[in-house]
Image 1 (cartoon, rainbow, N blue to C red):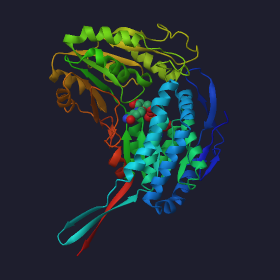
Image 2 (tube, rainbow, N blue to C red; image 1 turned 90 degrees about the horizontal axis):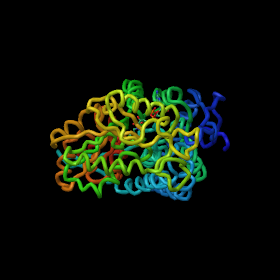
Image 3 (tube, rainbow, N blue to C red; image 1 turned 120 degrees about the vertical axis):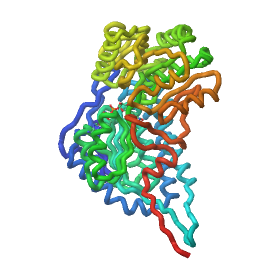
Image 4 (cartoon, rainbow, N blue to C red; image 1 turned 180 degrees about the horizontal axis):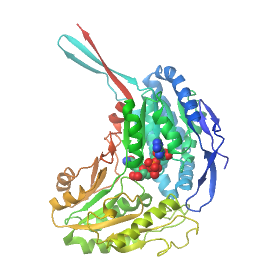
Length: 481
Ligand code: TXE
């Protein structure tokens, strides 16, 4: 594959640094291509282009920008199979998952925000003999920084509302997953999006991401990534009073009540635990089970997990591919070893040397899905984010105990409750300190809802009106009658 380039001011250009990074296929260890190892000068070039394009883009009408989003959605839809194939190549996830989740949601993100923006109504408030007009303007040039687990899914989740609200963009994908961000740049280029409206700068976080956050002409940052990195971003952005949206890590609880109809929920529980090899910040990594059904749950759950087909991501029948990199697999395996040291019992899975994945590429970063029982709720493996195909099991005796356990981490992003009584599940869900809780389902997403976490899972909400408001500056003009 041709070396990737940055996309700045409507052109694909090499980095001023002249340096590049290898982009690896984690399922085979092979080099796919190279990406620019850009630096501060490249960010400066992109920020200048974005700011030069601001006035003209902000002068377009909302209807015109909605039209752009529909054309982008159509163009991405036409390239869905490319998106699926490239995303699978870059991340090691099964191509079937990349098609069903990453490609489909990238299209629907643009489609959704085109439709949702059309529902915006002018807000007017009458009082004290005056009329108050709420006006919505673009923030300006916005910086979008995204992680490697759902590359185009999360980039499009930010690009669509940013564009439709009249902002220009400097975006930086994870250096480990550049391919579909590049495809988006190709699509926007082919659609003749006015130059400078969307700019893509590849490279390392501390070099490129940091320069974006620190740049005085980048007026907002929407960041999705790890909590530690989020803290670094916030430290730079806060004293500059930059608008900041932080979607960070999670350590989500899956609560299985004693009245859960196990036969019908076990498949959902496996999905919630191991989708994308557990590399989704919304995955449930701690499963809290009522002690009365623990044995029945373990029997059904472990049987299903052990039967997941792990291996070649290009095989349509594969359920779970590799993790993102060997370094990440080492990190996840470190937690599996720690769990055993902490007194845990591996019920299925384990480290790759102990339980190698059959017919997988020898140089691939493969791990079998792992279920660990017997750890206390305050064990490191039950409180720290592992972000891999590993779940820990814990039992509770009553709802109060389940809630206390669910809330016993520094995170608060997502969770799920499984029960035969939806109203009971809804009541319990409201006691869990998380941004989103599913009852008898998982990853069922209405894009109009607020999305984001509490505690160390982040600050702010994206989704529906919350995205439109983040990517707008709201002002009020009060006209005395
Ligand atoms: O994050 P990183 P990763 C979280 C998930 C996990 C992490 C995985 O829980 O913890 O993200 O993604 C750039 N200044 N979520 O490992 O390392 C980096 O180059 C500026 C939660 O990629 O934080 C990459 O582009 N930028 C989420 C991006 O930040 C910097 C869903 C993220 O990198 C930087 C998905 C710096 N100093 C993953 N250092 C949710 N809540 O929805 C790195 N980057």
